[in-house]
Image (tube, rainbow, N blue to C red; front, side, top):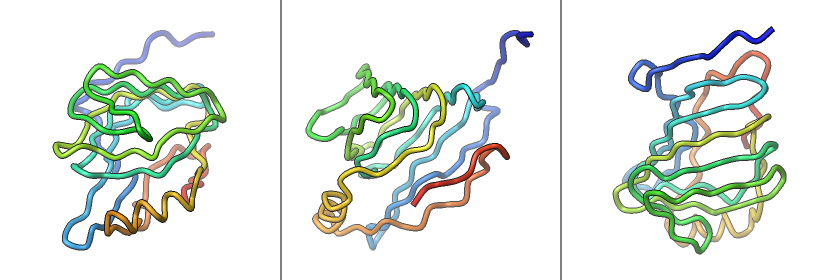
Amino acid sequence: MPGGPRFSKLDEVPYEEVRKIDFGDRTASVREKWLDFSPRFLSLYAKWDPGMMIHAHGHNSDHIVYVLEGDMTCGDVYCGPGTHIALDQGDTFGPFIAGPDGVVLFEVMMGDPRSFPADEEGWEKLLADKGAKQAPNPKIALPDWLEDTRT
């Protein structure tokens, strides 16, 4: 039996720091507010620090990314406010690089939201070119029914 709508308010949901890059003189992070997280889908609000980078990857579910503020690149594609990215389950995209003011995103993953890497050699080259290192993944408070498989 359906339970009806679920409501959340952005200012009442805590941030989870989910990824981090070390640039030597500074670090950059991705912080997410998980607005609704169930086995069926995850909807989230994300803030990326200026210059933050995420490796090319795919997801174990269909995935929607919508740019609210700031800008980034996804591979060779510039993504400013109003850009909508749709990724089918199993496809890959990226790498992502946040612009000089960072980027704010709204995302929805329909199913298992965990990701898998793509083009690891390209990622290592990008890190070296930017003088950056992948920092250890911060601990996150995943639901009990989901194992953290980040590498």
